[in-house]
Amino acid sequence: MIAKAQTQTAAEGLPPVAAQARRFGKARSAQSHARMEDYAELISDLIAAQGEARATDIARRLGVSHATTIKFLARMKAEGLVTSQPYRGVFLTAAGAALAERTRKRHRLVVDLLVAVGVPQDVAEADAEGIEHHVSDAALAAFARFVDAR
Amino acid sequence: MIAKAQTQTAAEGLPPVAAQARRFGKARSAQSHARMEDYAELISDLIAAQGEARATDIARRLGVSHATTIKFLARMKAEGLVTSQPYRGVFLTAAGAALAERTRKRHRLVVDLLVAVGVPQDVAEADAEGIEHHVSDAALAAFARFVDAR
DNA sequence: TCCAATATGTAGCCTTGGCTACAATTGGCA
DNA sequence: TGCCAATTGTAGCCAAGGCTACATATTGGA
Ligand SMILES: [Mn+2]
Ligand SMILES: [Mn+2]
Ligand SMILES: [Mn+2]
Ligand SMILES: [Mn+2]
Image 1 (cartoon, rainbow over the protein chains, first blue to last red):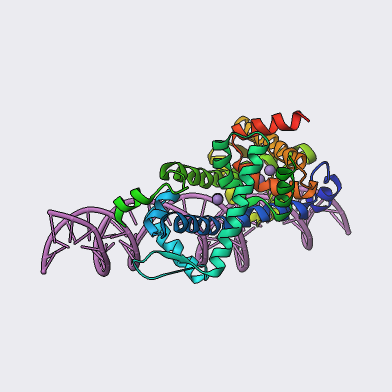
Image 2: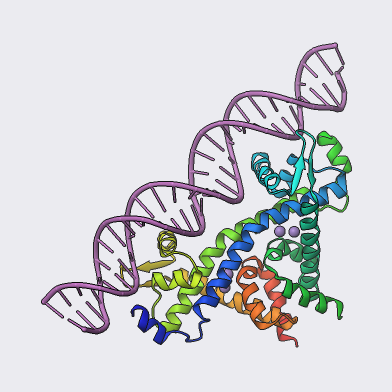
């Protein structure tokens, strides 16, 4: 064992260390963006559907407590994605709206791809909520080609 | 506004609150299992490829510090997924090996599906590392059908 | 044989994202 | 018009999963 031995025995079907570490790291960081993306998308959906996005509605739809939502909204505000006057609902900034739009498009395309390969609609909707945050632009482009060309 | 108004204006293309909350919750909990799955799979891969899985190797391949890995391994030990003698590497229990096997199969199938719909191999490998944890059994079954039938 | 490099383990810190409990503010309607 | 129910906000707790720094143990080789 020890470094030298490792280098000798390595590569037995395993990917190179650096490449594998990069992959795992990317998956971890995707996760950290996931919440931001879900909030942006949901806020945008709520405004479109009901004219406003209030903290309690967001919390209810995410299935978390309103305290959790309010704290998270403060972070989004700090990052310039949303604005809000107290007791007046939440609004997306240009950056927030752009994030929402990208996220919504990706969400839809992921659902479409899943359905296209035979996943039942409701399962696709459920799984997409997690999968979407890990689909790269390159994969997304392939999804679009596949869904269109059929 | 207030509850009544919400109920009235709701459902404008939005999914029912309970269903949406369930989806988001599922995505959150999938994330919390992700690390456990990755560790189990990686430990199994390392043992297969090099005869042993040592904490530092695991850490290197995950791209985290060895302290993080050692702490996580303690949790896996507590949950009965691995055993270890100090300085002797990590071993999977029957439960751990079963988790590794399930996870590996799913990982492979996700990569195969991605490639089958036109995602480049290396992109597929990278994205699968995150996607895999959010693919339900029902979706997996569809993936298998799709990949086979071509 | 024994020591230096490597691996393992421990301590203490941080951020994220959950939660409950309590406080303060609004605004619909009795 | 004023009250009360809903919403919003605050405080303080927790666990997970990162990190660095330091301490201890092992072991291949000189
Ligand atoms: Mn999502
Ligand atoms: Mn989504
Ligand atoms: Mn993974
Ligand atoms: Mn994997």
